[in-house]
Image (cartoon, rainbow, N blue to C red; front, side):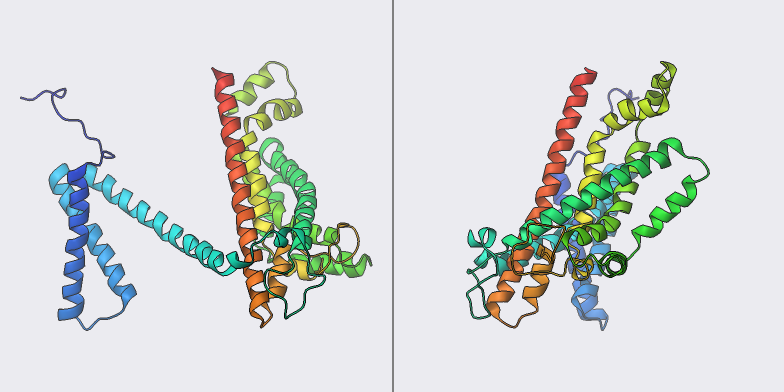
Length: 356
């Protein structure tokens, strides 16, 4: 008899050249089989139906072949890996196509003027490279910054209350936060318009836009921070309390520092949720063609409003500027996510060094 030590261990994740050959052969076999079925036996047509049937046939053939060669355990792992990889590709391809489309449409007007000039002296007959979106970029940073100052502390305190304090009010507060997650953005804009712009007589301003954006950011920040705080081991809290520390000191000195990278991610997700909104800004900041560096008074533009106002025109130059603004907005969001990943990685490395 062969001992267990002499048997070759099963490594489902190991993918060698014969495994790749089996994968490609299964895909080609499914392609030929589905072509015969579609073209010869069944009166079917349509690219989507053919692709779907080919994919299902490929999964069935590939799982059967791997099960015959390597066993059912490896087959189940390989099929699951193919399905997960296919889902990732299905999500990634539309994103790449969107970025490529916007890049092709807006790269022509992406010059230095776009970041240093406004639309003050620009008319409908001006070229796409004339003028810029300085006023919109400044307005976006100011409005998002004010919204972060409002929503991040409130979201953090609410998440700490829900996860660390609790009590009879925790359930209604959590239900209220969940309900806010589904509020349409235009409802937030209407609320601020009725309460602040018209009701309080403050008029359009960047601050009003920040109020509306903070309503959209608050549930995202709260729910994300709450999930991050749940990942902190209870042993850390118990050790701190056992040493005589109070609950607020445990939360401030133990729980929050442990979840720093997750807190940064929560803030970035909240910003990404609100930075591209247009509907609430129409009724709060209104938009402008000039630079207004005072977010507390007067109408103010932003990148979403700039894109919205330019894309409505029938002039090719203004449509190109709209795509350029959308391209800058995409790169801004991507940059925020990259910064969050870098901060999270640096915090994780520092925590590992501290543990060692």
